Image 1 (spheres, one colour):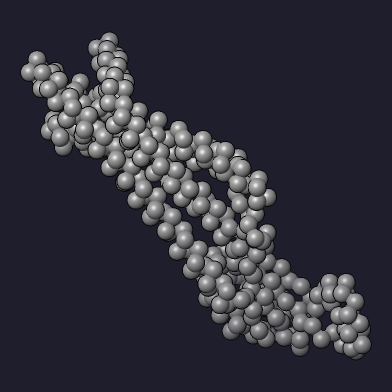
Image 2 (image 1 turned 135 degrees about the vertical axis):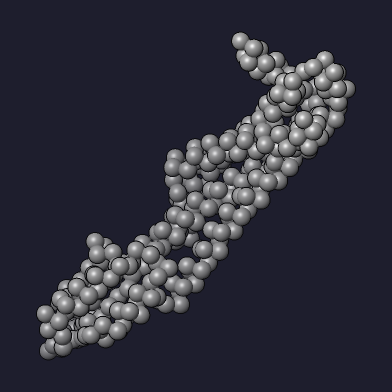
Length: 298
């Protein structure tokens, strides 16, 4: 019962302090909201970068051209060598015979007419290889080049390496931005709590004199920090849900090309909203706790 009374009184004190210092609270909430909006953008951007990276990785393949003179046994043996490699996804990889490739090209009349004039099929059978880890695609391709009966290996070396490097940089930048913004939010809320503590220093001194415990003194400030963080997250949550949904519908779910496909709103907006509320509340409490420890020295 005593704990319940302490919590009840702490909530009342926190709400009273929130409205008593409304201008300070509003300033903190505004700063927290702006910061959390940027955090939301960074999170949504990070989700989409990961999705775009996954889509691009899904279409990246290594095309292995088999020697025209290779026998069926040699071609099969080459396939077994390739499929036994650790980085090769055997379920998504496939083998195309030169006759299958010729048939697929027959839809183009100009190509078909040229191929029909030839006595022999000039095309080469190919293994179209999907890899498990795209960052190791270069090493995998180089190893395949050394196999017997392989005439050439194509995978768009320069483009693949540039894309992998670019998306790694973007992804890491998003993570750093989110961490820095969370630290800024904690700093803003901590400063608001410090000012609140300073304005109530006489009240706190009286509470100490009458023997009030440290927990009872600290609790209202912790709840106030939690309140500031959660209220500051309301606007970012609304903008995340409605803003991202509007943007997704406006661009039709993709940017510039079908490779750059955005994540559907239902998949990420609610997860992001929960993260924002948790970040706002937890950071608010920790910011408040830091202010209480440092400035009350209790």
